[in-house]
Each structure stands twice: as C-alpha cells, then as structure tokens.
Image (cartoon, rainbow, N blue to C red; front, side, top):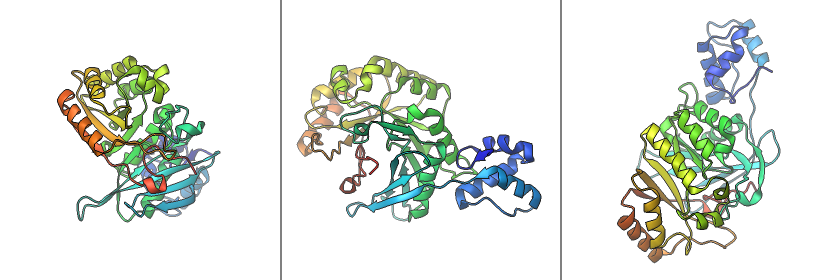
Length: 343
C-alpha cells in the first residue's frame, strides 16, 4: 500500500504516487476528493481509466467509526466518541460559535492521543494514563466527520482534546497542514490552534519550523511548587525552561503568546497569583486565556463570581496585558475542557 489518504499532504501524496504517473495537480485533485467528498475518483477528465485504476490500487481511504454522539441541551456543544484503527476510543467536540447572526460557524476540538501521559490532576484525560498516539488521518477524520454533522461550516480547529499534541508532534503538524491546504479543508492556518501543557522540545521545534498555526501554552500557576502539584510536567520541563522556550518562540515569530490559565478556586485566583504571573512574563507580550476548571469528580471548582471579579481586578493591576475569558461549554455532557475521557 503506497499511501493512506487523509494521512498525507498533497505534496506527500504526489511523492508517493509520482512513480505511477501522478502529477502534483492530480495529487491535489485526489486530495480534494478524499477530504471533501470522501471518495477515490473512478473517473476524472483528462485522466485515463487505466491510470485511475492503478492509482486506486495504491490508495486506501480510512474512516473513523462513530460510537456515540451527545448534544448539550444547554449550549449546543456536541461530543463525539470515535474508534479508529488502533486500540482505545477517543472524543472530539463540536463548538458552535453563534455570536453573529448570519455568520455562525463551528470550531472542532480534536484529540491527538488516546489518554495522556502528563497526568494533570484537574484533567479527566490525564487520569486515564497514556494509551497511544493517534495517526494523522484519525485527527483529520475527526474534523471531516463533525463537519458533515454540523449545521454550520467548520472555520477553526483546536488541538485541545485528549492527549498532549506536542508529544505526537509529526502527526499533529501533518494533520494541521492537511486541514489548512487549499486542496484540503481550506481552514485558515491562523484559525488552527495547537495547545501544549509545556513540552519544551516540542515548543522549540514548533519555533524552528516557523509554523503558521497558533500556539497556546497551559500554565495554571506561575509558582513552580504550586504548578507541580497540579501539573507533573513541571518536574520534567520546569517553568524557567518553559518560559525560555516561550520567549524564543516570541522572538522568532513576533507573535503575542497565548497562555491558558485553568482557574481553580482557592488555588490560582488570588492577587498573589496575578502578581507572580506578571513577574514571570515581564516584558513578554502575552494574552491570558481564563478557563473555568470543569471537574466531574468535584475535587476542583471554578471561582465564584466575587473571587473571579477580584482576580480580574488583580490582573488589571499587576499584569496589564490582554485577558480573555474563554467559555468552556458542554459540561452537562462532559464535553468541556478537561472532561474528555474517551467514554
């Protein structure tokens, strides 16, 4: 088998099928047919039947199995449980963006692994442990499956589902390239986000590759000891090393860095936390994304209104950089950030 469709870019498809007579133009047409229509063409203008038959013998078009689909009655978020060709199941989420009438769109939250090895205490996926890396096509097909089920077009993808994307770097980046190719799903590269809990070698590779996609780094605390209690990755890639990599990324890309802050009541929402964060990112342009923790076990809770307001005031006083409150929907169906568990 020369090539698995949905698993390679058009350029890689051309390289694989060039020996049987496939031009780059034809590779792009095959890519578009596979991703947009989910077919391997039987007939194409200006392409001989014999060549197409030979091409079809070299290709396979895989498809995820949908196990379950659940839709939130609160906010319209939808969660999909899939099975691929390897062990274990994984989930993806359809995020509706309905804030502008006539401009409704969908963002897909994609999983990159079955389970996760990082063990963040506030994350259901982390409590599963690591199962396996997903193949590129298994990530691409999450978007295709959800796009086919969505009432609105998919205009963005976030690699924020199950798993640590930068521990599956090659497959994740290839999936992002396929999704953004004009002959693929043509999702703008700037609308594709790759998130990390702080895998420093992956961040440095992301920087060196000068990728056009958005990078988000999950922080949770600017205090090394506190962060370690929630995110064991701190033992492997401590904050000084992490922030050095983040600063290198900004220096090379020129982009403002997005930091994700999962808000946990009584843990990281005090004025001291805001002051520590300001000290950590001094002179580094950042945007801070505030996300409520969602924990089905009940061990961790998001801040109440007064605690949140005080924390926002402290950030305005100390950080003095853009802060965004990110809505994490679908909690009633365990589709919110940190709740995906593959079941």
